[in-house]
Length: 632
Ligand code: FAD
Image (cartoon, rainbow, N blue to C red; front, side):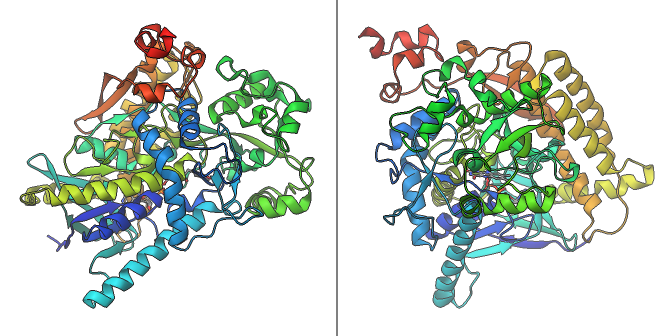
């Protein structure tokens, strides 16, 4: 049998996006020998694609902003299903994390008086997104990498070895986590270029693997987003929550077909872009849900005034939370008022000068010019919903990021709870920084508290190797091509567990997923192990399937509509369901068990941040009965 490369670390971070890098920096600052593992090239995590900005209540553009308003907006955006402790920590700590990035060398766009500028985004009461044009994620990743290099230089000065404390393994995919006596002991994977196996022994692992979008056929996500962290956690005995909640971003490109799903940043609307149907009507005024009445403008005149006088006017309904806008677009297209390619029109050309568009939205200008031959300074864009973000993820302790498995931590998009049923734009980049740091700290403290390190069982390494090689051994039996099975999976999820859901369709989806599971188990690949995309997909497929089962099962179970979960057969939000979390755990290779769990009641001082009239729209009378505000 082949020799397996073997490394030992204190903390292994899987994922080199914002969450992974911030966690690794923290673990290193706590004196831990840390590995950073990424399936793509270093610097090419999903975070780099983030456009709009990073939400933090710094109050630079509107001094009325503070963490309490940010907290309230986040809870409202998530329809009060959020883990309130996470939302509290996030709102309180985000400004410090943004400042800290500038100490690492980031340079955000400025206000005329030299402060970090902040832009408007859906669901945020005040301008709150720190940004660098529409390339904020690039600056975030660049800066975090720069910080890592500077730490490595310090380590070189002290030890003579740049990699004595932080070592990066890129193009390395982790396929298995190891546990010994119920605790994390290490992980296993392969180097993509060579196909050779590698094993990491470590008592603490931080999952920061991002999202699951590649289970859908129309998505803004790139190839890495196959839900690996979600699936690795499940198989290691951890739990996932909120998996029924997927964010369909309202504005993805719809034309040409080769680019369908690619994101059109919400900044287009934040900076003045409006949505119109084929009749030229600004239709969002017809879609302001009851819970948002009084918070949004009801006439075009008021909406237009808001851009220059936000304190005395209400914001335009184009800036409602994403789930609301995506459903509205879906309804317009269904009613026959869509654009020629099945979307609606998004227009900045009549609202901003070409100079302003080129300055504020340079990437969007190039994206449409090059990919669709549309000049957004002159013409409207055609846009429609695209699968963008998974609110659901690994259930963690809010303060430390640890899952129910000792030694297994999670941060960023692969963790769950923070965003409830719907994430506000800009709240992900801040989430990565706040909880990436907390996870690195949590992992370091956990390692310090151990008496002895759990040892990896050699038998587990053998099993992991056999599991990874399975697609080659089934080749002789003539299994299917993984690409065919993947497409079937994407189609099933897109058509049957998509933006609008029905019981019979989801039941059909679950049947299909069972059938796909059988086929996925026997997919076969030929050729060698070096850079073999069929093999890589065969292994990723196993993860996408498990995660899709969680989404479909949880979506069938939740009999109400809330945030990123819309049921045609249960169209209203039900306060009884707000109290319920659906918790997924794995049973065997690809079976999912679903359990209900009561939410922890919100702390009274946080409840007090809301008007009772608003709370009544979300909470049951019983829940509010004991709250002192009702007595007044
Ligand atoms: P990522 O940045 O995706 O990193 C995941 C890492 O895990 C990668 O390094 C990947 O290679 C690695 N990985 C995955 N699986 C494995 C494995 N099995 N083994 C080893 N490594 C693995 N949010 C905002 O707040 N503001 C925005 O403006 C914004 N714009 C966006 C624009 C686009 C086009 C998209 C797609 C998303 C946007 N988001 C935005 C959302 C936000 O970018 C993501 O939610 C966030 O970047 C996720 O960060 P992360 O650190 O959790 O994961």
